[in-house]
Image (cartoon, rainbow, N blue to C red; front, side, top):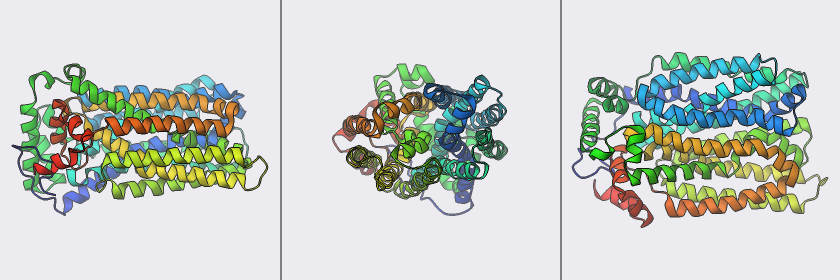
Length: 492
């Protein structure tokens, strides 16, 4: 794969080799992905804790929705702020700050005496979750070799679903051991403080993104870091390639952040497409399962404790799906995985709606059929959409506005996530499982049409090649005409 996806005039990349540098990039990904683990645990912990919170604080469905969705709406702001902050102070420094917010927000929630303080703690954690959702994938994408960039960057999404699974398992254990004690949700929340501390300590020994360093004039530091994650010859060639693309940027797009975005209609277009991809991921309703899975399973016919245990099954399949996605990430085009994923999830929505309509309440088979279909939905989502979406977002934007572009797209996705988190309890109460999942099916079909007609391919191209294609608008023409893959390979 040497030189794969390189533009004309680019230096030929030496082949990727094995050695200590491969182990180093693996270690960096493990430490950085603690941010994804925290993301997953903090979003998943409400699934199992929410009934205890509602009972102890005496909240109605809307009040509970505010507690759960406050983290998500704060995450939208965190994603929007985290991107530009990482563009300014660096990816590593932003992740360190994020770890502090995770830790302090967790403690604030755990020791909150009332609804208002709990809300403040959830907002603090939400800011960190939003920043983690964009800064960690960008950090990994900028450090990873292009041949394994999808697999390395995708590890963050695997960490997210692993964190959610850990939350489901820990919640089930704590719920069964402690029962209905009023403060059981505080114990569930407290677990998050442990990986938050580990993330901060671990990132103190991790390097800054070499691409960010070059963009800010620190070429020597960038080369030194590249030599720790590449063989020496490859590191030097990559540095020269980053320098070349930076020097050849058109004057109107050489500015950073918002100025760069507003200077080009092609950049505005790719940001809008990025927002659409992030929203498409959310409107599948995956987080309705991750936040309110126990409630949905109770509505399906399970008892409260049985639902808490059954809730682990989707979490396990989310991790299995993540492993499948990682295996295919550098083998299958991103567009193909998006299209397959939305086709499968929309089919599952229809089947869930039909099954809940046809099989009457009280039928002993009903909860198990719905659990099976929910598990199929989660497996489809994690195998084809979740990891691929965040990898795509980390790749598609030019370096000088990568944090901002990813942040804006994440903001749009998190806002949609927040709307679902706020209204799903009321939606289930109002139209039941049948109406809820039929609605998801209709929206899924619309999202599928958007992906087919608008989203460009990124697999197999260097970040520098993608930057040139996006800023000139060539990537849209190539992709929609089915030429993107060939164009990238022909210029080897």
